[in-house]
Image (cartoon, rainbow, N blue to C red):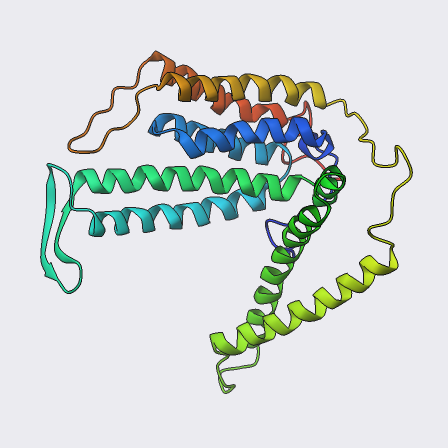
Length: 298
């Protein structure tokens, strides 16, 4: 399992993996919506925490940690880039003078705060996507979309399968290159990309042949793709509906968030704290009694 990408789907008898595709999509979709559209730092932090808690509750620790690291890198990048590119704001922290092409660079506290807000959105989004990738079977997505968008469903499912495999190939090739010893010629990025591309094309040919042999595209018998109800469906339907209504309500009502330009304006009210508490506590929905992250994995 260690050789797999952290974002690879691993079948487990956990709540989110066992739930139906619709309830799971409603539940995680509420987190994705609030991470995309909210401008309240407290709500964004709470949603990120809740999504990470949900991932730990269904044994997706590796995906959560990987997504947090990637999200933190994106957040730092957004802060630096926005601080250098945007000179708006009243509080000037650094005057870096004239730069070629960019002109005058003044780093303001407001531009750094705006970059941090974008970074929080990116981090929360990455955690939600990581939990989805690690806990939702892509074959179920393919079956659900098969009737309405057969080719698009196949493309999306293959991407979700093959991208983590390519990431695993890169890790294994890098490890193998490092074991050759200090006297070996270093493996450059171009050679690594060439090897990954060749391996991906070989795998694509094998996948195409397998799909043809298994009769993909033939009409399935009636009722063959009918989803089986899970005992966790009601839990995620209720939790997902509550979180989705709360997210849509906050967006439609236009709850105040962090205003960065021309100066700081942020006064979290009781509704922001209630919304943050809902999304932070919503992560406990995936947890089962007596089956924490240290329980035996199936």
